[in-house]
Length: 188
Image (spheres, rainbow, N blue to C red):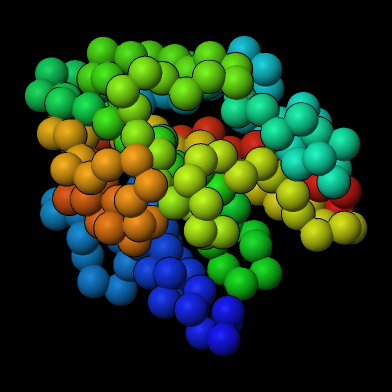
């Protein structure tokens, strides 16, 4: 029964996240036209392609489950809000969404370690929980984790704890620019 309930959520997330480069287009194109990869994403705690430090991972891996610090270039004018999606494209059942943070202030250019910005909202993740689900790949596997920042032309009209597929769809419809940083974690 649990598999039956999660299947629609997982399929919706996989469909939305398997987009061409942006992470938000499924079998039917949701983002209209071309969306530039004009946002540069980085972290003071790790580098592109490098392993993410253990403190940001799950307790089973010896981590503290802290949200990582991130920095990004602010997109051009016409931005009403921003969003962040953290996903694992290497999960056994397809893309696993670890965190969706949306309605981040349009002028923000960083997240501090262990802090969720004021007035930002968090969607349900693939596990059906609101907030950050730290990296925790199966034993013996190494996975990629993609931090994608989206510049949105308007705020997402949903509140904290909104359903994953609804929030991803709303983000896709409002995206005007994006940028991504990919890191690794695990023992594969």
